[in-house]
Image 1 (cartoon, rainbow, N blue to C red):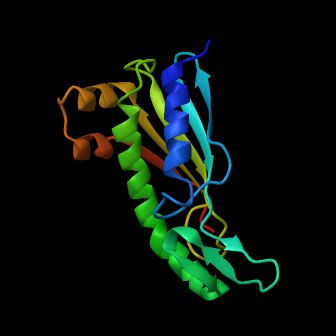
Image 2: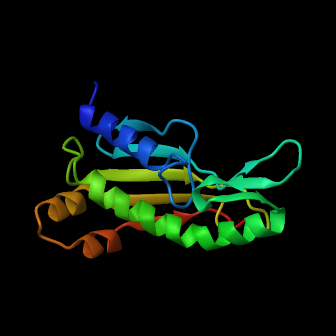
Length: 161
């Protein structure tokens, strides 16, 4: 069954995390989702920090407005951007996730993110954020604050790179 609210959320996140709008990591491929009966919806994202130039081996970081940076500079910037990315993703999950009508109170909204490669940076290789439908509904109804809703998001971080 097609669930327009889930499709809409996918479109919103696809746009939010394009390199021209994102402020940290960006995606250049579609964010897709699975609807799992009695569980909720899982969205899959792969995010990047930079594009490597084929000729020079240097990196362009469009969200940081940096061009032709070396590996050391790129990796330092990635480490700086990771906490901001996680914080922003949680905020966006709560803010835009509250529009979902097809997620039940006992179901979850999950974002499963494969993070940009950054060997030796100490950031996780993946991030899974999960929030219950009841939290989104409570926030939408004004029963809890945005910060309280964000505080109820559980995070599982993959192995550090």
